[in-house]
Image 1 (tube, helix red, strand yellow):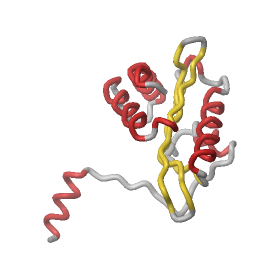
Image 2: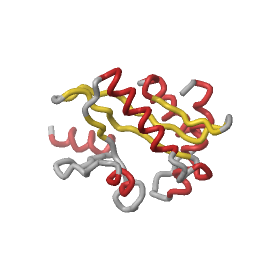
Image 3: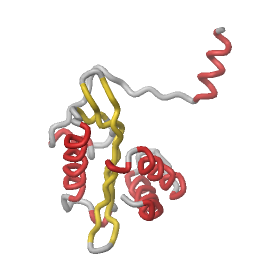
Length: 153
């Protein structure tokens, strides 16, 4: 991934999520900021798929030290709709995993995906990922949480 790719990747990411319809309303601008975050955080683990000079998608993740070794953490993989089902995501994931193992001795890839849609969870399971029954994703509006914390003190 190069800094010059960020705008186009933001456009693709926003389009993928618009078509995927999972409730996340990504704008091009917000998605470009996310791509910039990953590029800044871990540029050596940010990969772009190029199809005859056209950006087809990307894969990226960060390294997080954990009790059992380095984990790839909170990754993203997305492919433009016109390039999907051509094995591009698989090739990107292979590149990401190989680099993470070679450079960081990564032992695990921990990320999130959607439960209410068969895909991409079915793809992840097919290639060897499993759902972690011990974990659950938590999220909260920071202002509401802060207000409750202030009331309890």
